[in-house]
Image (cartoon, rainbow, N blue to C red):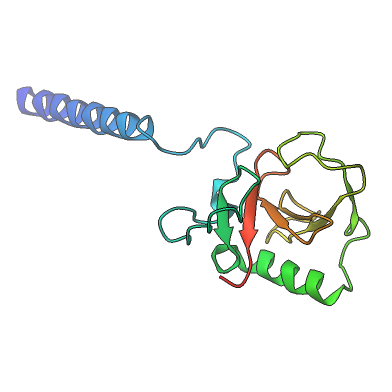
Amino acid sequence: MRGIARLLLLAAVLVLVAGLGMLLSNTQGSPDTSAGSTTASAPAVGSSVPAVPDGQNTSGLEAVAASGLPPEAREALALIARGGPYPYSRDGAVFSNFERLLPRKPGGYYKEFTVRTPGESDRGARRIVVGGAGEKYYTPDHYESFLLILEGK
């Protein structure tokens, strides 16, 4: 009986240590994975993304190479380049930038386009927003954050 109690105590200590280790690793620079987060659909951003030449990115946003976007976002970029046809009636609608995360521009400057999300029965959360000068932004989380898209990369 004593041996079983010791094994159970040892197992409980190991579970606590493992849980504490996971908790500490999640609080040290890891992305937020709280409810509503769509980190699984977000592109990998970091050292693999080429640096933006000085003066090219005036948005103040982090940039991502088009090649680093999910395949569905690259498909949406190709549709935008061709001028459609778009799968959703809201594609090409005015994006008003109410969140004010993109550079401030006059009304009607930005247009939004759907990026399909596998497994979603509706439009999902992912979009590409295109500015009047041709600049493009990707949002994986329905306008909570944006990345400047670097095309040709």
